Image 1 (cartoon, one colour):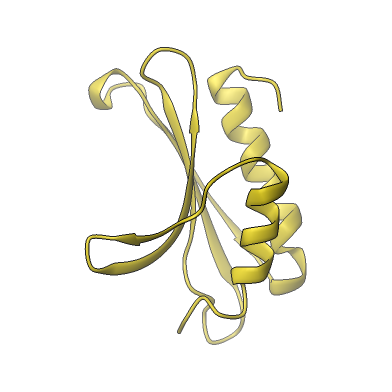
Image 2: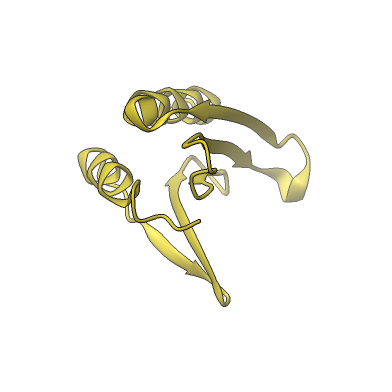
Length: 101
């Protein structure tokens, strides 16, 4: 599967939050954004390409302390709920990083 059907949703959502969308990691297509916390903490939200049934996995993680005390969550969205689930993911990271959303 490709990201074609969800790119407009992910791109508009990221723009609304002032986040840059990254689309390549090494030689692989990805859709991910990063949020900076205090010190060296960094949050990441990324999505998988839609499954054959249209479901989209949304992954949320905060990386800190050289791998210790990381936090991660996986959410599932349908095409129509992707924007709302991405907002939920954003709120999770904002809480974990203790930044205002």
